[in-house]
Each structure stands twice: as C-alpha cells, then as structure tokens.
Image (cartoon, rainbow, N blue to C red; front, side, top):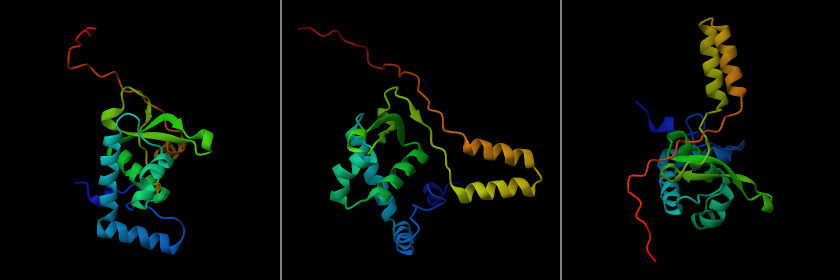
Length: 173
C-alpha cells in the first residue's frame, strides 16, 4: 500500500534546501496538506495547457507569481507528477535563448508520441538504505550493480503511436 509520504519525490518529503527555514517550510507544507494542494493545482494547470506543456521557468512566469510559487515548489510538483506517472518530462527543451534551458513537462494524456525521460529516483538516503541492506545480506555484487545503475544516465523512451479511435472524415471545402 502506497502512503502519501511515498509519493513525495525527495526521500518522502517535498524537499528543501540546506537551510533550517527551508526545511521547516517544506515540512509544514507537507504536514498541512499544502504540498498536496499545490500538486493538484499543478496537474490541473498542465491539463489545461495540453500538448504545449511548461518548463519550470515558463510555469513560474505564467503561474508562479500569481500563486507565489518559486522554483522549488514547481520542481517538487513536477517531480511528484513524474513519480506518479501523471506528468512526463520530454526530451524537448526550451528557454535557452533566455539562459534558462529546461525540459518541457506535459500531462501524460498529451505526450503525443514524443520522447520523454522515465522517472528514476536519485534519492541519496534511499540509495544508501538500499546499498546497506544489500551489503547486510552479503550481496556485494548486487550492491555494485545497483550503484552502477544509479550512476547511468536515464535513457529516453518514445511511446508507440496512439491508435486512432475516431475514423477520419474527409474535409470538404
């Protein structure tokens, strides 16, 4: 059974930077349900945006200031969506001309055959717990394989084309 805590993308939390105030703010948002509300709002916005999607910078420019969200909030919501499979990070990037090159994220219903990167957690605490467990079992080779897999870059995947469910009707002029 998956708990809500398991859905948080950063070792069971919504994540924070290295400061105590950032950690307290994130823990309060997780505890009070604010993180969940932000995630639901993000998915709704991504559904409305359809196939165009957003980079985190575009999301911040479009909605972040209205909602008073910063990079960490947006990135956390995108990561949660990727972990659940609701949002996908495309191989496509935008924003290089503004010095903010980032991957485009879309709702899974609007992938439209485009290549994307599957979610893979790179949580250090989770990795260390997994390696410790493997070593406690005496499985050194399995621990080495796990470390090697964690260090490999994520390979992009391209979904198969969707089958049309509605027959095309010729356009008449």
